[in-house]
Length: 288
Image (tube, rainbow, N blue to C red; front, top):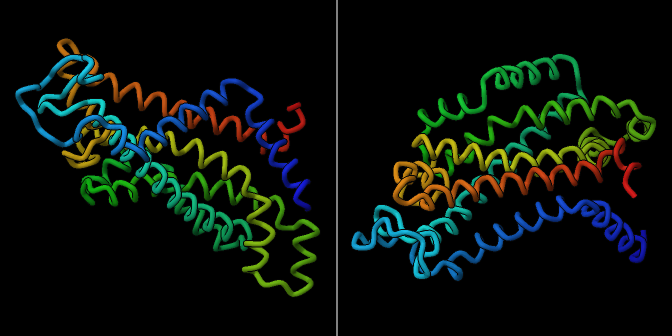
């Protein structure tokens, strides 16, 4: 493919991706939060961890856009740093789950037999436990450090990737081009990574995008019940938990991080829907 053809393909991809305004809105929301998280130290007007009890529970004002918390810390600054925490946990947890699930799905779908049975039964066992219950159980055992939280949130979604990848691989493993490569002496590793993985990866991109939002929501849930990020690290779920008792006197304290969670999850889910519309062969023909 020459440079002109690649450029045309890229333009076509983005034109199809953003042909709906709601997808553009979702992408803009995600981009705003990513920029806010990356440049939190520059944008934040105050140190999010500096305690000033003399100015605790102040309402929204020009000096403090979202007011202050019970320790006098600026809520807007903590929301910005909370975005960094949530995105970091969400991205790494999803990356871990995707890599593990895709590899397991490739192996299970390609080899079949007892390998497929063992991997499938393990995945079924994990799926039998509700994600929140599994995360709560692992959180009690492993503690609530950020690395532990990434692992906990990642392991609970590995079966989703494994099962979808397994189904994709089983659908094309007997295709002519795969069998031809095998007859020509291509090794298993080459077949898996050079032929099966690229042709099965489109649904994975959609699932990864949508799972980032769901993982951020799960992190907020664990932080809300006290099994998430340890204080004083800024966390949206922790801020909602700390601020809900002040809903009457200082509603912005709890509502601001809650609205951010809602918007970011919405943005990733809508963006995932847009990617599905572009990458799903069944839907691709309906786009103009």
